[in-house]
Structures are given as structure tokens and as C-alpha cells.
Length: 179
Image 1 (cartoon, rainbow, N blue to C red):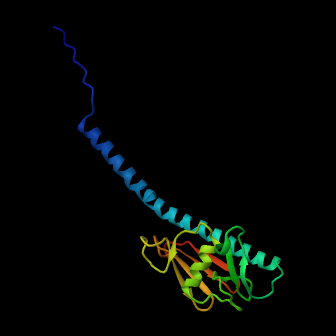
Image 2: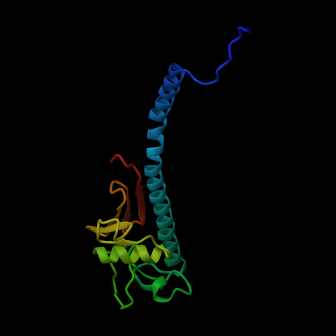
Image 3: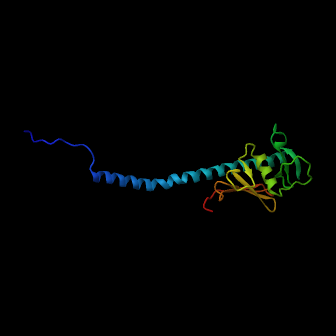
């Protein structure tokens, strides 16, 4: 009779427990990083939209100045081949105030509808905007701030917003989700 033992292959219970504990520790460390990816995506979305909005405001102001304007301008064609949808009424400082075809001698940004019209005209393929805070209704909620200012809140994460001051063309993207 031969006295050799057959070698068994496999893991002991203690080895399995150690592996499970190591995997649990890795999951605890990595999980918060993956959870923040969604929030980071929202922040990036708002930053990108805010940058595009700021560039559009600057473009409209340059177009107003290049056409020799020095005061209010009604129905200024900012985007060619866009018809009425590419026109803006510029306020006395030369910044977008609204998009309404009827003549207005001194256009001002003075309500949420004006904020929405500027948003939709400046951003030709604009993210949806309304006065509703519901993410199912629109991506952004437009609010009017007296005088001549708007804030566009990101409905997915309402601490993120884009601020617009039509008195000086300033656009500020508030991208701190912990605000």
C-alpha cells in the first residue's frame, strides 16, 4: 500500500473570509467615488451650459457694438438664417434683454418670460427652460431678479445655477453643489 495523500485543491474557509473582507473594504473605499460621478456630471453640464451662455451674451454684445449701436436696439438679428428666433432686443447697455418681435423703444429684461426668451435665443439648441422647478418639466428653471437680472436653476440639482445680469453682461456659473 502506498501512503501518499491525494492533494486537494480549493480554498479554506479562512481564505474565503479574508477575500470577502478585502473586497468589502475596497467597495467601501470605491463606492463614494462612483456616487460622486453623477454629481460631477451635473456640475460639468451646468458649467458647459454657463460657458456657452456667456459666450452667446458676449457675441450679441459685440454684434450690437459692431453695428454702430450706442443705446437700445430692437429686433437685432444676432443669428443669420434664424428669422425671428435669431433676433434680440438689446437694452440701453447693449446686452440682450428679450426676444419679442413687436417694436419696443427701450427694451428691458423685466420678468421671467424675458429671461426665458434670452436663454432660448442665445442658446440656439438650448437646454429646456421654464418657470417650473420640476426636472420632468425642464432642465432649468428661469427666475427674474429685480432689476434686469436672471438666475437659471438646474432642476436636477437646484444648488447649481447660472446668473445673468443684463446691465453689464455678466454671467456667473455657480457650480458648487454643496452651496
